[in-house]
Each structure stands twice: as structure tokens, then as C-alpha cells.
Length: 433
Length: 190
Image (cartoon, each protein chain N blue to C red):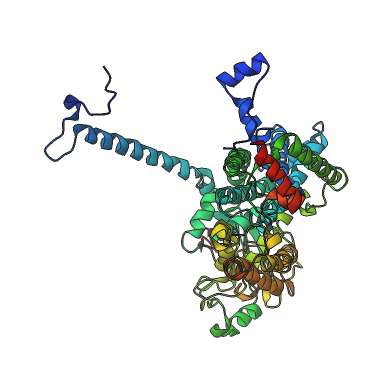
């Protein structure tokens, strides 16, 4: 779909006309990310991260396919082939550092993308499906990243795989059989490594497919914008190309500078030295932590230290349930936050709880997830976990029913140009008709 | 000529007295057969992920315990996981027996966790019941924790001399696998 004033694709070259008749792929691109897609004129830089996430996905697929040409998923040689890539393969070190840091960059970008969604309530009608598909993508990313981290078969790979598959073992009755089935053995071994490699190769393409659905669903209502006011007339929009291709291009440049600064100067900063020791099933590293992008959820997992409901639900199971619920509750966000106003700009109460509630909570969980499981981190993560669920399940629904939003601008054009000019523009548009 | 009006031709309708067409039966039969076939195809696809024959074949391990002196322990591999075999000293046995059941999170006596007449042989998995780390204490010079058994460095679970959980987040005692003494010096685990 598009707005009625969207530019139509008019191929000039005979070859393009031929193509447009037989397989209108250029038309599809033109309408999706070209001049044929009208976008609100007031998008700020927080709207860069969707395109950047798409770029990261492509980066990971390209470097990943290259790495798979030199890697072998067998416990006898996996660690060795990883080192072979680092030392012997031409440019192998760069491909691997780009892939490892690319995963981190992908998560940085996606977290910003998600929190943009939280602040501007991008999940609200009519964009619920965009949001739901986004959460699916995030879950797929987490699974992919976890399995990718197992592949080098270092100590952290091995013990990470053991701890994470052990989470499934916490389920009553079916837990242990499921864990053994997932691993294809009683502990991570060749069967597990091989299937993780297979799935790690597959899932990015599944992600790419869901990304296409995500963009498709987005293009039905069109992009949201920082005011949260829907597009009313042609003066509210500008074509995606060249305006936002340029703006996203600038963002991409900044991103690449930061990303390559990490790749070339701090390639192991986000990694763990223990993963340069080959996996050893009888010796656990002293301090097991997942990769940084899992820390907030790892903190929630570890926050449950005592049995709940008079021992009916063991602490370990409760931690696992809470960790999964922490993401699953995002699926219900469009229906938990029911207020009609979208943007946090015009929601004074919501804004306070966002900046002084949700954001500090996430930072505390993030910090505690990377810290050892001792006081005061345990108590901090318990408090933060409590607030986290309170925020989404209680505070947001209450805010959305009692909050008195600030007055909204009449239109995007008015928000950008001020009342008078917008009125003039509106008049001239009317007289032109 | 093809029927373009969407009405059913009388010769193909063939409606029985109960209002069921012969074609309905064919439709239901075809869908049922295809559906069953589809579901059955899932079975090998799911079951291929379960442990393979060679992994299952390695599911028993024999451990030679003749060289373990009282007070010593060894780590062996059982199903690719660490196994602790400890020869308890009389003092450690006495310590374990002295603990009242009410103090234990997962109440079990040392006798229940060992074989009759072989109370000194404490054979457990070296897998912390919290999140699966390998506790310290089986190797020489390793920290055995505040209760003198095993100590998990990951999240601070402490086990006593009978490898029972005493402190920290782990929910249960270190698991005692199935095993039997095939002779005085050889234990068959699994």
C-alpha cells in the first residue's frame, strides 16, 4: 500500500520496461525503499536503526558464509579450525573479528531500535503486527547468537551451551528428556556442535524472511514518526529516496566508523579470554557469563534464589520462566498500553516512568547480569526484576488509562513548520486543487 | 464445456440419501492419508536429534578405584560429564552422619547415597545441580568449601562430605548415578 500521492514507477529504459512487465522487481524496490515510498518528513535519527539492523544482518550473512568455508563443526577440530581462520586463512582474522563484533553491533542497533519503539509506542495500532514480527526477529537473533558463540568450541562456548541447555532441564518432568534431545547426548558434544552449526547457518535466512514480513507489515500503515500523529496530507511526507536514503547513509557512515574502530582496535574487548582455551568438559571456568547482550535477561534468571509458593515452584524453574516471560511480555505490549497517544513526547507520566523507571532498570539488570552472583548484585537484580515486570504489566496499563496527554499538533507539517506556515501551506494546497 | 457457473453437474454430484457426496469421502480420505503421512514424517525428523547409537553405547563407564586412598577423590568421565569418585575418611563419614535431617534442603543420609557396606565410596556426578558447572573439591588442593565436600565457584553452592547441598542456589544434592561394584576395585557406572 501507499499513500495516493506516492510517486509511480515509470521505467524509461526499454530493458527496465521489459523487466517491469515480466517480473516487476525494480518496481517492488522503488515502492519499498525508493521514491515510491512516502515517509513522514520529521523522522529523527532514532529512525536510522531499522536500516542499520538490516545492514548488520547482511554483514553477518556475508562474513558468516565466508567463515563457514574454513570452519569445521567437529569437536576434534572446531577449535583448531577457528585458530586456523585467525592465523592461516587470508584475511580470516578480519572476517572472524567482523563477524564476532558484528553480532555485538547488531544487538546494539536492535536494542536502540526496540527502545525507540518503547519510547514512541511504535507498537500501538495500526502497527501491532510490525511489533510482533520484530519480537520474533529478536528471539531468533538470540537463538542464532547463542548457537554461534558455541561454534569455536572454547571453554565459554562449552559451558555456555551447558548452562543454557540446562535451563530447559529446569522444566518439571519433561525437562531432562528435552535437554538430552536438544543436545543429542548427556552433555554438549559433537552432536550438539554439529546441529548448532547447521541451525546457526539456517536461522539468519529465517530472520531475513521475517524481516521482509516486518517491512511488508510496516509499509501497510507507513512509517510512524516522533510526534505519533498519523500522516494526513502530502505535505506531511517526503519520498524515502533521496531524503531518507541520504539520512540513513549518514547514519551508516557513523555506524561503520564505530564498528570498525572496535574490529580493528578492540576486537576482543567484548569477548572472554576463557574462550581462547579449548572446551574441557571436566573443568568449569571460575566466572561464567554470557555475551553482554544477554546480561539483562541472565540477571532476571539469577534473581530467583528462593522457592516460590511454598516450594511449589523451585527457584531454578522460576528463574527460567521469568527470563522467557521478560521477552514474551513484549508480545502483549500493544494491548497493555492502550492510550490513544503514541509518542512519549506528549505523554508526561509515561515519559517519567520511561526515563526514570524502565531505562535505569535495564541498566541495573545489564550490569548485574555481567557481575558475579553475589551481594549486592543479587538483591539489585531482584529489585530490578520486580520493577521490570511491574512496569510492563501494571504501570503501563495504569498510565494509559489515567494519563492526561499534552496537546498534540494538528499534523506533522504543523509540528515541523509551526501553526501559521502550516496553515498557509494547507491553504495553498487546497486552492491548488 | 467447462462449468463456469459454479453449479454442480448432476452426474458428478451423486448425493446420497444422507446428504454426503461420494467425493466427500475421497476428499476426507485423501486429506487423512496426506495428514497422517505428514505427521509420521515428523517422527524421524524429531527422533534424529535424540542421542545416537554410539552416544548411547558410551553410556556406561568402568572406573578402577583401587588407587584411591581414603581422603582422595578422582574425576572420571561418564556420559561426557564429570564423575566424582571419593574415598571418604572415617572422620568425613562421621561428619556426614552427624548432620540432622532437618538441616538439609534435600534430606538424604550418607547410607542412602552409597552402597551397603561401602559407605566410604561416595560416587556422584560432578555436575552442580544449579546450572551444571563442575564443582571444585575433587582435585588435589581444590577449595572444598565451608562444608568440606565440594564447592561450586559459579554461583557459590556448597556441598558437604556426603555431597549434599548445604548452601547456595543449587536445589538438590549432587546426583548419585546408577552404579554397581563389579569387583572390590572396579565400579561400573550407568
